[in-house]
Image (cartoon, rainbow, N blue to C red; front, side):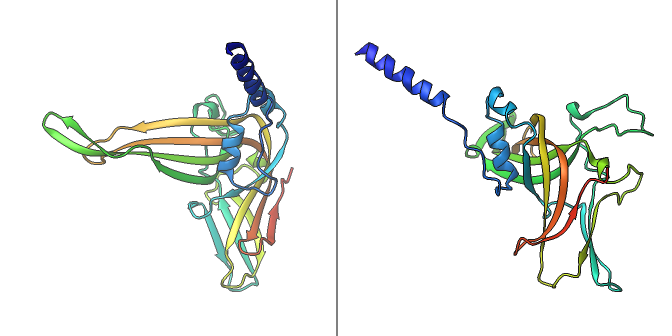
Length: 240
């Protein structure tokens, strides 16, 4: 019986090892879904994805960098997504010896894709200081980004707070809402993650964990779409 059980166990493990990971469909533009799939792939499977083209949705609702400019004197609108301050301040993005006249200190740029929140455990009561008790929550935030380094393939590097992705749109009906997508090619290491923790105190009684998760790629295309119909209203391609 022991031998049979061991045989069944080994067969089960073998079957699991050869089960192919189901990748999101080409129509799936959820950056969180793509990240969670890619991040758990073994190295051999991950390597097969190098160069694969993926399209993800950019989070415009939480993007203060985005502005829709209305020109009353013309029949066009301008979609402007400023990138001057979308630098990734992580160690793997630093180039400390960069000549500021020629290159940026932060090598990689980002586009925000999604943010989610999760309360991991029920609130607890803890003695912060002797005789001082506080109810503490445990909150985790996950921020998902597209990280890329070829921003200046799309426009010249310049000292300008309004530098970024700019596209002319035909005048939109008043009820039209925009969405933004980025198409990119996966490049090694294909994903990165950082973690920051803030301990609860009396001013903010929350144990707060921030996980930043990055899909890594070469940016190929920016699209602005009618959010309801999916019609592509403008497309930005690399200029070089």
